[in-house]
Length: 378
Image (cartoon, rainbow, N blue to C red; front, side, top):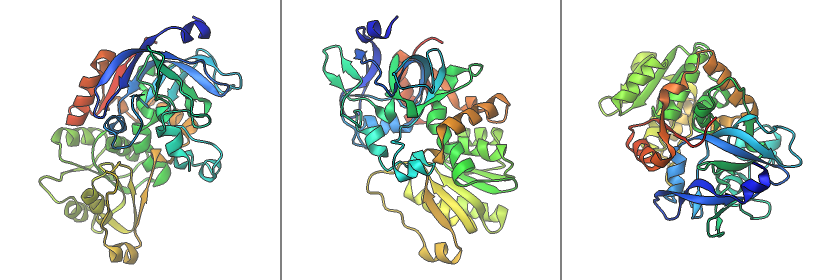
């Protein structure tokens, strides 16, 4: 099927038309890729908490919109200036960035000064155009994380397409583009956890457990997982946690100090709950560092003990997308997975495309850590 034929045909995508959803499977159309874009036939897309945050307009993305930002698929066509990938390549789709601002130029594309425009505006940032339209030809907001991959096809920019090895299970790889990358990258890139270190993951969802796996993979020897769901804590032990704390029953700061004496070298919060973030800071040893990676409600205020930070020389910082360079980091995670050292497949449950609302509900209830929506064939 040529690109022109495809552009004239409809395909299925999940459209959110009102605050709070639901995801509606509709027939949509797509433009041909622009000169710097890539048309991808989507095989499967992970579902992330941010999809629900956008569905519910906690992040004020425009509706109607096609969400989805952990896509994996096969290149169908490329724009005239694209040499990075070619038709038939297997790819993972990740966050978009401008490539021109200071953070991008300094090797931190996840901290792009134009991140919101490139990932949440609902349109191409350069000209305000859309890649998708409904069956009635009315434009649909798209470009969510530069991809909008809850559909059989997606158009991404060359900057947020990552070529991956073809012997890896493509339908499994989408979550590496955001959630898994965030947890693992925070440990390996932002905090630089190393052999013999102590680390605490506050929150044992997909992001937190990815951090636990990464800490174990690099040889951290004391690894805490803190959550209120017993099944998640049991899985954390299987994935490398040496200690687990159910914070509904025990004070995690007291437990961490009892085990370590002074606290952990590193901590990460993936809950976005300010009281939990405060515990992550309190659980640090002197000179320790904590990372905040979870999305809080707009306007949330964090209350920290300033003297604890100053006198104990602690640092608390935000981290986006694991401070990753996706073209480098995602292939590394795949290599670790295929070597048996990063078993993120244990977090996953697959759903058919028509079950997308069930997947969202299961994710929000904590029934499923990382849903992946099967959309197309490999």
